[in-house]
Length: 252
Ligand code: BTN
Image (cartoon, rainbow, N blue to C red; front, side, top):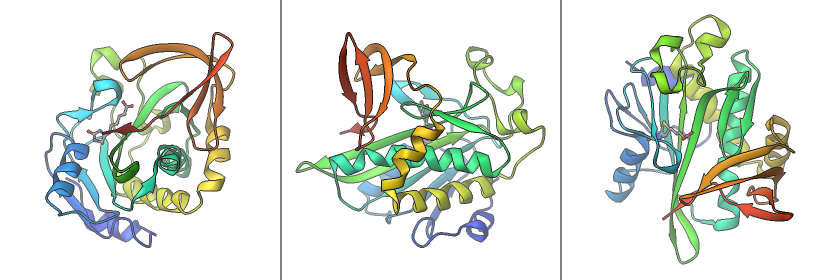
């Protein structure tokens, strides 16, 4: 059970989270967000949150595992039109907000491009930003975030047992998911109002500048040296002596 009044009490936002849609069980908070946008039933800053996400979407068509009643799965709907170059900074802002949220709860988090949220080299969360484009502008965006909060080691399926962690595992005590949701939303709204500083903050949290990384992009596998991010938030990767630019948002 998630208590939306606990989220509301802890929010320190001007716009985000004024409308919160809670579902006991849902396939995916991102998918539900798109369905509400389509039906014209969402506002800018609406939060969609569930206690049990059964078909969470991860990057590259992967599924995102959430342990019922233990993890945090939520999406924030953005409905203000944006130029594509500005939109690329939004996942960066979400990553910084997530790292700050975990820091606020007592752990040192780092970020791995495109948006893995890491604690002690293990994955504690992920961000999936999906957008719809019209006339070369982003019309709407759904920022989905999943964080492992109160899972113990054996809650994770075998395939991620060794690579995943949770806030509970890292701190030794349980955390209130509503508070985490409110803190993330508050930091995220602040980062979006301060996008010029976000890029530098992201670089400070990034744990792998100068290292070789492998990743999937639009169905293809790439490997190269991660050089940092450009002024729009796209990744700069050196592949065969050439610096290539990769965006982290999914555009439709
Ligand atoms: C990743 O692959 O690292 C991104 C995972 C993003 C998961 C979150 S959970 C809430 C939101 N709803 C979804 O269906 N996916 C995102």
